[in-house]
Image (cartoon, rainbow, N blue to C red; front, side):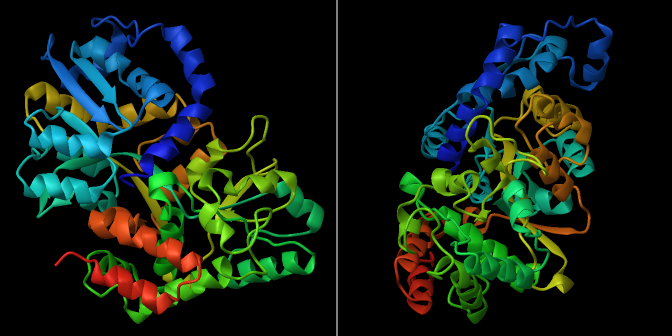
Length: 447
């Protein structure tokens, strides 16, 4: 996610611009207007006692989305007297190591890559969370999420925002007209694809072009299928290199993904042949759905922000999404996703207080009310989530029967996860065989 977070967020930024401008117009600044002595500030009592201090926060979240973020903690600032100085950067992933290694780290960074958290923790740069932050995170987040912020048994990063990737976008309107039903198993998904072919269309539209991050959408396919064909422990072994990248189980996941992605009868609706997948931007890939030229598009919850203005995203609307079906229902309901973690490079009391607040359900709900945000925080009230896909994402993340795993390429060493894995997927889409692709990635793994 180190590289591809930026284009994703740039699109989110564009889509929420109107919302943000309206909100900004109401607020005028980053103050909530709440008096520190007012009853509303009683909830912030645990964080008080640091009036006049400052906390710097650095992340890749920019522009309109950053405005929403700052609004979400405006009341915290007014009630505690702790000033939060936020900086969002399009070069976050590149600049954060430079700043940290140069002795100029932010107090807190919102890091979307557990692998980067481990890098800083192993180097002794990160500060372990306070006991209060750890307790708050343990109260509000599932154990799987806590693990991604933990290095060598020490908790460093409290979970923050999230996304769900195990979605297939479709048009409820088209499904009703054509008599299609939402598939709940892999077999039904393939049967639906065949039915669309029989009706004279290519069912799937796919794009993996994303600038410097081209290839990442295809890695999500492999990760989602790995979770559906294998026990979560096998997924973990794959990510940790406990098994080689060329393991037959990974080859099987590639072959299953290829049964769709490399099937000329299935792809690439509205764009061209199989190779057009590598040159079609992920932002545009699913748009033929609204024109009736495409039926299915696998992409994350944040794709809700890509649809043209006026498109109604709802279960009975122009577009919606269903859960990417399981291959083997006996393996439960695996979920692939991603998110950010609030990690601290300083352990001053005001920094620890703010880090604890960011892990609270109070902040999660304050941010959710502003729209266009998902969190695995168990305290998020669904009534505070307006966007139907965001609401569905929160429901999935809060489902105690779901098996969640973080984006595998984000967990792998950057040279693999954001390097050879991405490049390997491009070559694979363009015709390279599975065995050669897996060997290429395996040989790049750091020794």
